Amino acid sequence: MKKKLISMVMALAMTAGLLAGCGGSTNSAPAAAPAKEEAVEETKEEAAPEQAGELEFAGKKVGLSFMDASDPVIAELITRVRETFDPLGIEVLVSDAGGDSSSQIDAVENFMNSGCDVIVIQAIDATAMSEEAKKAMDKGIKVIAYGIGIDNYDIWYKTDNTLAGTAIGEMAADWINSELGGKAKIEVIEFPMVEVLIERADAIKAVLEKECPEAEIVASISAIDSETGYSQTETVLAANPDLNCIVAISDGPGVGAYEAAKAAGLEGDSFGVFGSDLSNVALQYIADGTSYRGSTDIDIKVGGDRIAEIAMNLLSGKDQDEIVTMNVTKVTEENVGDYID
Image (cartoon, rainbow, N blue to C red; front, side, top):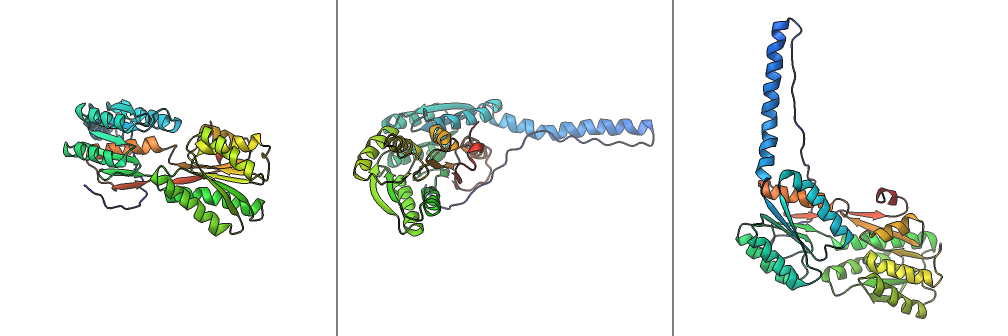
């Protein structure tokens, strides 16, 4: 069924441990014994609900279908979900679609046939996956849409791409205004093949136009990977040797663009690159104080925990918001230490 879109941040808490009560009287030895016995009984009673909760989840199955499970961010997310579910006896099935929509459809069908109770979907083709999600829901299977929205879901764990793009643009604008006097020649790395990334790029440009009216976007390129970011930025630099700022919809092409600029001798205080999604390479560049100056954390560190919490609430029938919006945190040299081991 079609859900009404509501942008809310949900704070979920997982409970652990036992409550044990202990009471006694110092009046006499006979009085102390019943108090101790009573405490034991209370401890047993307190333990029962938690034990029952663990039994409630035992034998459940959760299927995870991602665009590319080899992506470090997704790999970490899967690990965190397993760490939460394994002790509870919840079986985790994982599908790596490898960017292929047909493979993802087959995987979700397999999840349904395998008896999954919850399926998490990062949709490659939102239209096709909406149909698969409806099939699952008709069978009583709970569906969590991860990142990208689909028409049918129980919970949408949503990436707000306007919020993400705004954060990228703000980091770049703050740097341009403080270090370049508000004037810059900017390359924007977009990826219009994906609708939600158009939203992100539009938000980046809107911030730059508002906050840095004297800056100029001299080039826009389309790239989603490091190699393309490198090669296309080389071309841009040949035509614009005075380029001094690059903003990218993600760290993949952002890292490639940075490396092209560095190869052209543009590394330094008057050059800045800003991306998103916390690639390990980008984080290290930021930590090293290079011209790669910022990225964004879109619930990347806690995404696995939040998916696990949402799934467990669905399994236990707890009420929760239909849309859970991912938080966006700017990551710069000031706080990058929180993200590097």
